[in-house]
Image 1: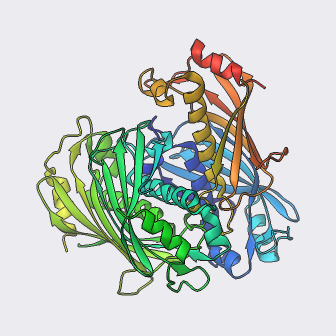
Image 2: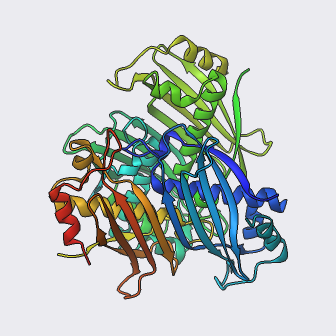
Image 3: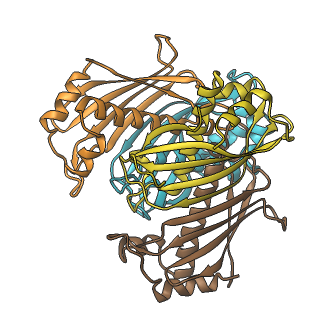
Length: 138
Length: 138
Length: 138
Length: 138
């Protein structure tokens, strides 16, 4: 185990007038990776955490470096791991690479908090979710 | 009264690789116009219909002609009126114009249904909402 | 050969306040399917048609029936085929299914035109692109 | 002069399954404010900077704190000012408030670089654009 990896091509509608990935769209890709990571690592769809267990993970802080633009059609290899795990919050790292390069072209550190979706009160990570995060620890 | 009008510039992030409004973004603009129209004509925010009265208006059919593209920065004058009102459904017309031109560059006819948000069952339009639709009738 | 098929789950950020796929997002999914179909059937990335050959396919008309909503997490099986091929335009059909159901929950018929991206003038479909469309004919 | 202010309601399609503004949508709102700020302060549409003068401002770094969620329909009062001006880059601050509150519910610091759109090489801010940034300095 370790980092989770997914390849997402830059879509026709994701570029802006400058011909490069419109920067808000990176965050949509990060969330797609986050959803797919949970689905694969937890062995149940991401939505079941929210729908059935009523747990959610709002982002409370994210910082991002955009080092090299992505152009239409370029595949973005997105690697997700975890740099910190707390009782009720954790920090995920998202790195987007051009092909097989070793230097990430985009890098984000995003902190999410575990909450109850009905009350929005913070909540300790349940053991199975915590285990997924620990597997992702870098 | 009559048609509702709003001007929405084509945003930097709404154009695609071809440099023109990515066609799914038109539908976001139509919905923005729809929300603002209700807020203005009903005298209460659109959200209160959904949140407090638990009424929603899913689109069940929409057909759209894209006659002339919109480029980044061009203002889209969006005109909303109603071509048909039924007991539980209505058809809205959205026409997007370049500036003061008389021929619409984009034209859509979208049918929405009135439903209860908790059950998704159809519902007669309440009188105040029906009145708004009747004012929009062309 | 025949229809192209792809499965796209409804994403966390694609649902609206009513908890169902926000209808403009369907069109983004249709375009994703369109891009992936070309990449797979043409044996070269979709972007190369646009970037290297300067050919584009703006949508000039689309009509869509939304028969049954998609909720967060539900997989949308999207089937793309072609109902009409002309010299410079073609009509694609997009059908979105819940799982293995036989009745589509959403169905769209979208007409695109082949243009030169530098002049926006219509252009006959090149033979290799026409062949892809013919394989998709239903 | 000083900070630029705009009010943007949270749209029906901007909330996620948790019923709050999907965090990538904040960045779209920041860009909308950025475009409108330039249009108003420069006395010419934002697009003319890009289209006619071929200058662009990609984001190279942004960090954001999300302190309190925005729900569907809530107006977001967005205040834009500048915390640093360099020769070729500048840092903008975006603060989103619930109504008239004094504590921002969301706060971002985003660094943009001035580039030539044809070469993507960095470029000193032209005097008129620099003047707009200086007026925004907090």
